[in-house]
Image (cartoon, rainbow, N blue to C red; front, side, top):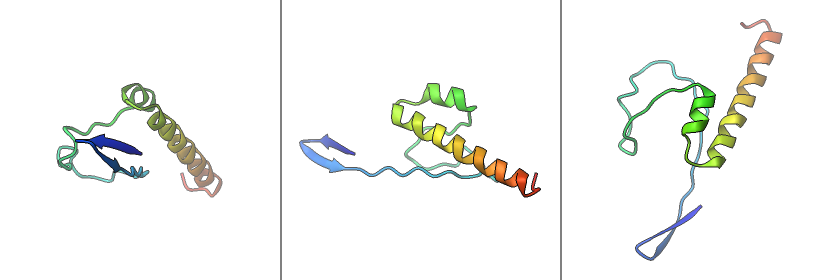
Length: 77
């Protein structure tokens, strides 16, 4: 997407990743965020500012659901 600051137009690309948390500390995060928290999907959707990010969360849920179903079919529970 694009945004304008000080009369200069910038193009910004945002990438989303679906990751598994395997450890660490949520207080140790990069400088762009004030804090990091985990929420159940419905609450996360209510907290998001942009509707397109809600859509991305539901797409991630669908990917995870299909992956879990494939794992069950293969006997990996």
